Length: 152
Image (cartoon, rainbow, N blue to C red; front, side, top):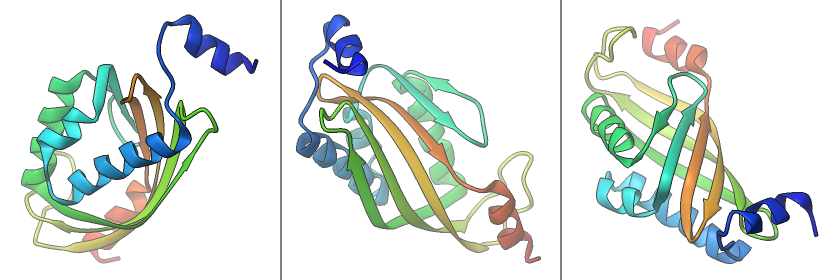
């Protein structure tokens, strides 16, 4: 058996099928597009961790909910062309998508918000256990976003 699968089984978690993981990730991103925080949080498992390439690690659903509230105040974002890829055992997944957004309120440490719009290509990596997302790591280009909102 593959060592990653053995590791997961040794922790006593149940892996999902690849199809079930794709469905879970799709539900998570559908909820994102609706700004449905409750459904997004329902997709998350115990010990959830959120890593972003341009910020601090968040541990737990409470911290992630606070992050989502902040994001909804400062930005309005919609995803399209979401492609979800999974490992054969469903324990890991990746997604790539287009993000279109509007900068609504100035985010601390970033340029002033004036309703600027932006488009980004984003990638995300997931760990899944017991039918829930236990980690998501999101990657995008902050310099590209900054160029778009500053107008250079």
